[in-house]
Length: 102
Image 1 (cartoon, rainbow, N blue to C red):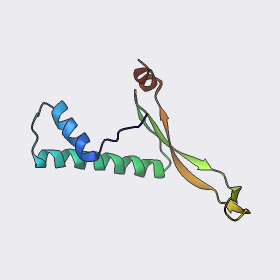
Image 2: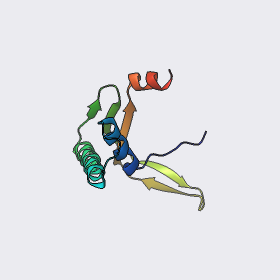
Image 3: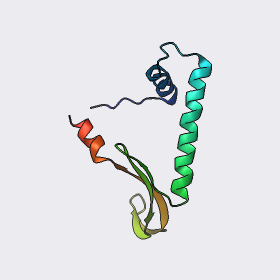
């Protein structure tokens, strides 16, 4: 199954449609794109600062420490050390999973 991707512009147009505007102007679409950009920026900032962001019925964004470990470089056959780092994780809400499966 090939997944379809929704670009930010298309998402902004769909938001305008959900708000009742069937033929949004470029300015209205750009306002929605700005809201999407601000939301993304705030999620990144909070996760970077060690906070969890939970949207009930959708999921949770959170930071997690990935421990350092020895990995293998397949092309060279040598072991390399991958240092400890923080990574962003997303846990899908059970309600969202239920929605997908019904």
